[in-house]
Length: 255
Image (tube, rainbow, N blue to C red):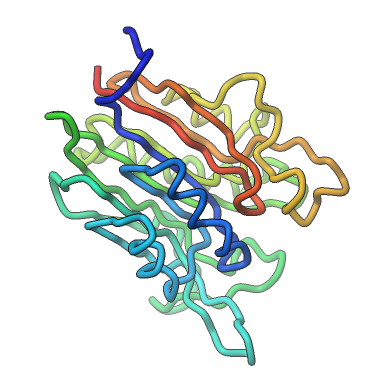
């Protein structure tokens, strides 16, 4: 298929924004890329309406996953956020595929503790160019040093089983921060079900300047763009300089 221009393509962006630490970089970024669907991880609830205004989004959806300590010790609610500038086919939805033992409450994050936040998947079905697109957003299980731990592998299986056994996902574009580096087992499990559309030459999606480990020059390709065969994904770019993770930018067409 010829994608020289791609005027009919759905523009999708996925980004871990690391709270509001880099908020001042978002206006120029959104103005340049103008996504139809924006998937954010580590999004504070209090900035969602501001981002929607920047983007000109007509639909927003927020799914809380944790409380993080804010200024003065006040808890800040954080989670997944979805934004759309194109019409919805159906209302956004979500499920938690791992919930911590907090009696139905949102847990409070503890530094370096992968058990202190819930894992969720949020998705939205949108209409563009006369076609339906199903876009999902997730932030997967963190591990020390990016290792594929038994916990991460169990959580990966839980998520994939939910996706496979649900009638809600006849086709899917799956975006997010997987915390599962390419080349390790957890990432391989996703690749058994979906096509990995991050270019093979990309070795890392950690920002080379803004990430806390920048001095170590770690190479971890953890921000993902997977799809079922129903989608033709092209023009994929990994954009630095907007958060501690790089943004994933892509154009998508239904086949």
